[in-house]
Amino acid sequence: MQALLVRAERLGKITPRQARYLWMQIGKAGFRLREPAEADVPREHPRLLTEVVDTYRYRMGFTPEDIADLIAVNVDELEANYGVQPTAAAARPRLRLMGAQTASS
Image (cartoon, rainbow, N blue to C red; front, side, top):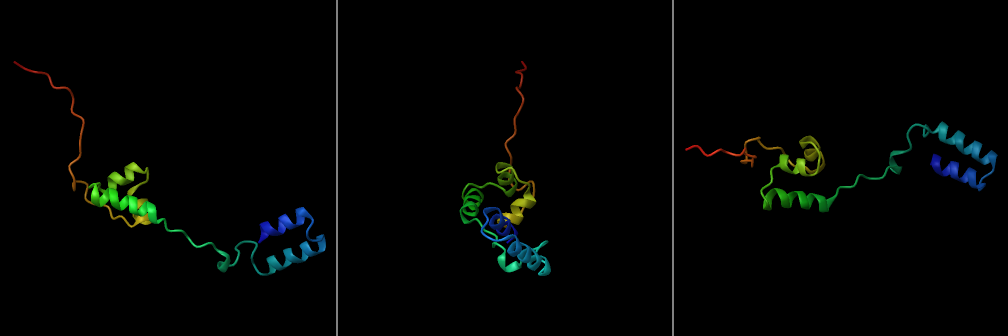
């Protein structure tokens, strides 16, 4: 509401007296710090990304930790945003790089 009021003032769509009155009303209603909850935009819940995470997890066998590494978030964020529960660290064998072995005779 405050941004709309500032814009209306700058465009000259309201008089200074109207602007002053509206600012007073906004202040009186307590909307200077927090606008009404009814004006809040509802939080979006991404469906496609959740489907992608589920595909990696259940069809491709990735652990939640693997998925978190792939999308560069920590496991707590993965759980909070997509409902993916972390697993035990040893739930799946991991590939590891082995050093070159020398042949002994």
